[in-house]
Each structure stands twice: as structure tokens, then as C-alpha cells.
Image 1: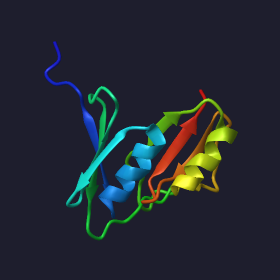
Image 2: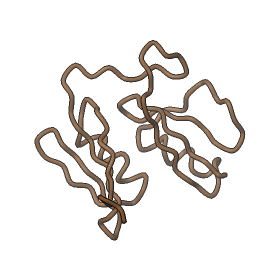
Image 3: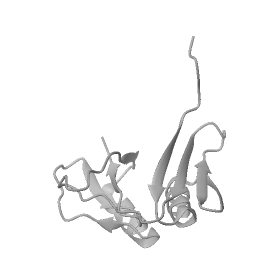
Image 4: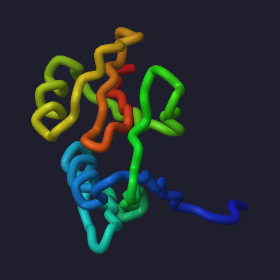
Length: 119
């Protein structure tokens, strides 16, 4: 039997509300934010990603390792070409380094790498 359940990830960022809104809109999840903390939850309320505002935040530098990425999110989409303009409109940036064909690497508004994946 599991000791715990329903894990959430907490991501450091310079603006917790802005990053929660970015990922909440990307995934269609509910956004809640206040006082340097944000969270998004799926319809069931069981899946959760949290965002913690950090003073002096330094974004990761990918693909280099001077400031390691430490973590990144992969999200599935049906079509990369259709999804790309939508995530760019939310505030993402397409990274210049694209090492694969079944996924694309973007930076969220706080500079964290994340991937749109079809496989």
C-alpha cells in the first residue's frame, strides 16, 4: 500500500500567479493564486502543480548546464504545428535548440523548458 498519494510538483519562479495562469491555460486546469503562491488543478482536483515565488529567481539555461534545468514538463498534444501558435500566444518562447522530431522544446514565461510531445 502507498504511504502517500496525489503528489504535486512545486516550481520556483519570479511570479507565481503569472506562471500558474500560463500552465492553467495551457492545460485547461483551474488556477488559484495568492501571496507568492499559485496552483493549478485538473477537474478531479487530484492532479496539482504548484508555483512558488522566489526572490532573485534565476531561470535555467538549457541545453547548457551552467544553470541546470532541474526539471521540466512534457505535455501531450495532437499536432505540434497546431499547438505551437497557441502556446506562443500564452507567452511561451520556442527554444532555438530542437533535438527531436516528435516533440518541441519551449520556455515558459519564467524560463523553464517544457516540451509539447506527440509521442
